[in-house]
Image 1 (cartoon, one colour):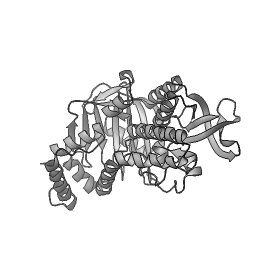
Image 2 (cartoon, one colour):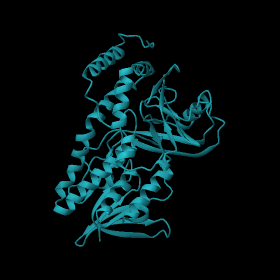
Image 3 (tube, rainbow, N blue to C red):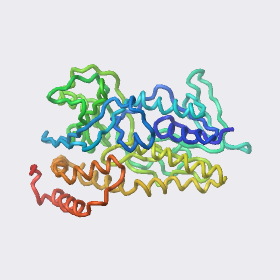
Image 4 (cartoon, rainbow, N blue to C red):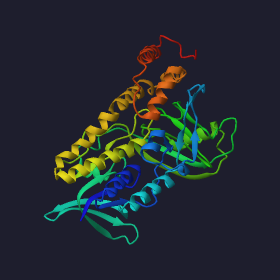
Length: 392
């Protein structure tokens, strides 16, 4: 009998399992083999510090972000006094799973099938990848961290299928040396309706490789053709393709994260991805940590009512940032005209400073009220067209 079965071994599930096992709780970590999530791989300094990410996992240290408009004008935003670390998800996720196992979590490889309950307790059924048999794990509680469109959430959480998604697709390629278009220390973010009609495209360096991709919520949009065009524009069309991956990314947290008795979802399964940016690694790990801490309280008190506290705690810390980013996406991602204005707004030094302070530290900075007021008026001016979208 396990105290907790964690379903899903990505950054969220592995972080939760690591914390639970480190405190001596009998923990199982169930994950599918060979699954690599499409991801730009960016992790900010706070994630590196909070979750003790070793330097050797960082494939690149990015010091500049370039925003590119629909008319191909660009703004380079320096990352002052720091960097953003870039990881390869195949290596990064396995490191997290192994770390949890070293703390005592028991690893299982297989595909989650269902949850059943009887007088003896709760049982997780999964199909073992090695022998194709269905096996069972008895447990008191479950954390569902099985990603977007989670099967755990679908089975246990009401209305879990009603949140919006974008489909992300990227190609991992062999990276060239520094060229006129590619810089191994720069992330390029492309706001262009031909690349993505409602989100953005990206070129993110990973040391010897690079991630080139895009996301969209428009059904029928050709993701592979758009990515091919993006590679051509970036001068990367001749580079060898290592692998191709695609997956849904949720854009809004679920209204409920628990079933009131024995299941709590977290990370992508709970809809925890930042709007506008699509950033997920840090927030997945933060959600996994909060889910595990809440689960410990639930186990000790034997009170399933505590499970609802996980959502409250996460949104208390990160909800304001999510609301601001959601409003920005709704305002600027609707058309190329607005995307052009958004990139123009990024030219402002105050916007650059406050944006990266918020990204690096994962909270809105309140120490500069005049700058916030200035940005608010500039934002309104750009949206209403009072100012020109030309750079000033």
